[in-house]
Amino acid sequence: MDNYVPSDETTVEPSNPFPPPYNAEDTKVMLVSKSSKFSKINSYVREYFTESPDRNRFVVFKSTNGATEKAISCVEVFKQQFEEPLYQWTRVVCSKRIVLWKCQQEGPRDIRVTVEVPVIFIVISRDPFPGEYSCMSMQCSSDKEIAFLPNNRASHGSGGKSDKKKLKKGNRKTNEGNKWTKPSSEQRKNEHKERNQLLKEIEGPSAQ
Image (tube, rainbow, N blue to C red; front, side, top):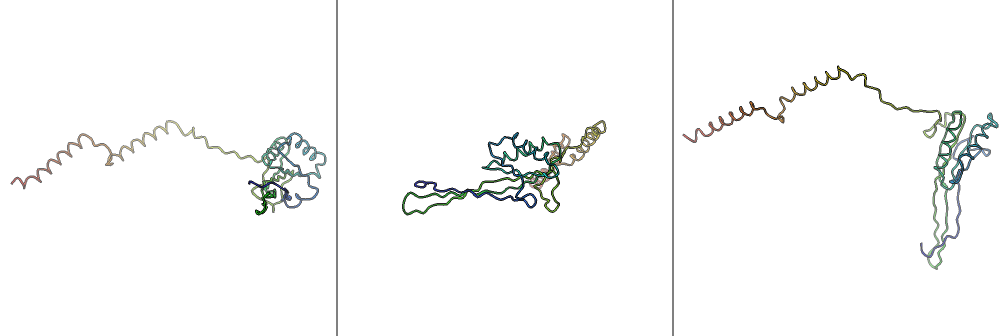
């Protein structure tokens, strides 16, 4: 953008996207930037939960300046270190950075550029969320999904070998009538004999 210089810049931060009580004015919100220290933030949240366990039941983590990955990692580390199961609810919105570019020449008009930056909000709660808020972005730190295949080694034995032999024998029988199989020597002799007999029948009338 030749002949343009940035003149003014404003940032519009998104509001807390969660419903009550997770968006109340007194909600504890932890701002996570790219330079934030996991140990410092997580120690503060742990103290907040333990100093008044009956009242302090949830905390909101919010990323700033594009530190969405840092906020996610911070939450994951805290869930692993905390002794009790924790319930998580995640939402992603965008902040807007509006930049006004002034033209240094007469004629062209100024340009206003809007850049949207993802902002992640994560609620960490010690209690399950209300049923009416149930959605796919909720999870519990104690949830574990184990995917495995059944062990089929016991089914392999002498019976398995005999079954394979039966299959091979069956395949041989079915291949006998297959036109793509290689003919035997006896079949080739019969085909040659039939071909000669057919030629004699064709040449017989013309020879007479």
